[in-house]
Length: 118
Image (cartoon, rainbow, N blue to C red; front, side, top):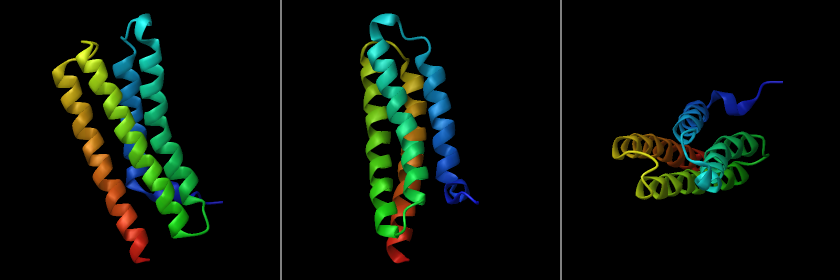
């Protein structure tokens, strides 16, 4: 069985985003364990929604999951902004994560539009 989600570049980029988030949040002190876990869950949700949505029977259903992925990437970025404000990550690290999130957001938007045209 071929898994449809693997053919989408955004899926692979979302995995790299999640790996970066895990690496970035490893240094959080235990007081901020709740934030570390939330950011990681949100970044993982981007991947899982792409995979789950790709298995749906209609593009309309898949678009809904793409929308969920968009929500999750924004949630992860918002969590990183809180981490920045709490001095858990540097401005440079936040800029990099923001750039990665923007790239994935654009990919998800393009995929959603492509699905609407199908």
